Length: 358
Image (tube, rainbow, N blue to C red):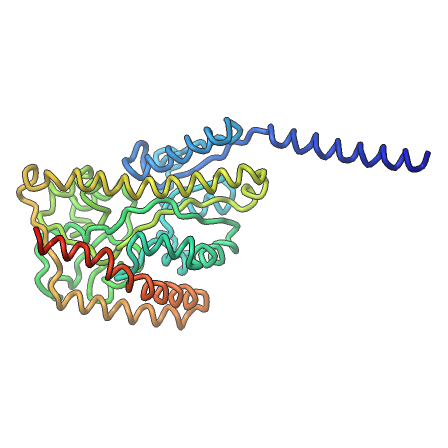
């Protein structure tokens, strides 16, 4: 009788656990996502929509993502704080916007003279980048995941041509991240302004120059109507956006929904990279015909050298000030050196060959 009683209790316990697991599997969850971008913002906003659609389909409706754009939550550069506090479950933004709160966050968007998109994704997923990113965000009750890449960004729109370092002295420019600090070293007054305010700031002379993304998004905002000089990039060779997730919210999700989130975020990130390439190429194809006033420029060699030297100086200082910053910088530089050696004999060699035969 005792054995039968013990077996009955064990069977009941297993049945109860199974029933609870089944019930959990049928639970429905809704996560609120705050994005830095305005409603229906192209490419960036498309990325969050694709992510939400993928999650809902893969989970068979068990997980829904509700997106609030900047016009709804009114805090485009407040996404970090809102997700950390649990006001929102998730966010979509760019990690370098938080450098004033947590300086080490800026390394996970893009670094001047750094890795291209392919190299950077390889670092994130195979070179230890994800682990370092989590080390930075863990104390703030958040997880951070790659959220879509623009590829190489353009160097910005300027009202006047930049011919020398003297032309940069006192120039007011919207440029975020480490690049803003580099520009500050050579005389620029950098500032960060929310995307929806950029055109007005340039039009009203609040700023003299603006860096945003690339042709597809820049031309939509109308910068070509105000500034004639469009400079090629150096500062953001692989601009990675981010998905932020409140850690407590993440831990409440069943394991299968967590995995669906991971897959959907990774897929949306890849989609944004190829979408950016497509839209930029399409916008670039007609730029000379549609906007003959626009002049494509490169910064002179002495400016590039000064910025390169300033970048090295700032990296050294950042590594001295923070142990985690040193770990990230060492990891990125080491991985870039290894990866670039192959990029040189593959991608660069191919492009150089094509330039010669064409």
